[in-house]
Length: 118
Image (cartoon, rainbow, N blue to C red; front, side, top):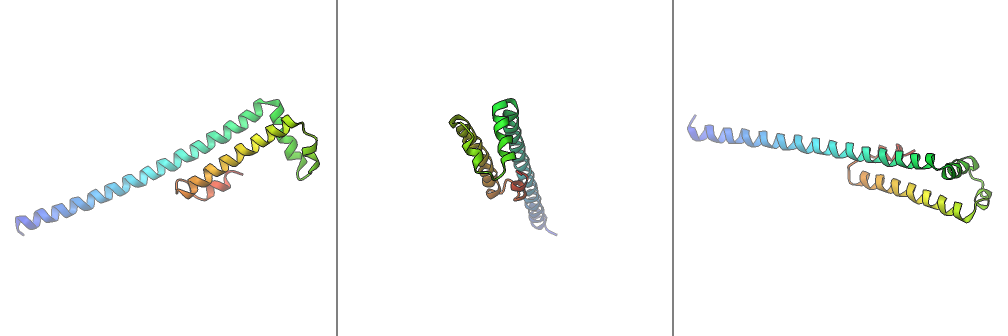
């Protein structure tokens, strides 16, 4: 073996090792991004539930809606302020779903993340 062959072999091994290292780093970065996205989702969901729990009016409205099921008359029993508050809750919930959907589209979260939203 000549010196040139040894240097080329070492260079090839170095390139392969570098590519393996970069691949590992990218994989770890993707895992960190996914973990951060799940953490954000958990925090946002917890914040929504905490806000409802700390507001007797909002808590009553939310669970009243759950108990009413598909009864269209339930909306008629609400004041305009309560309807506005429920609309805000719905918009907030849809925005959370949209955020998760976009993260799934970008590949930050797996499709199962949408199922974890309930």
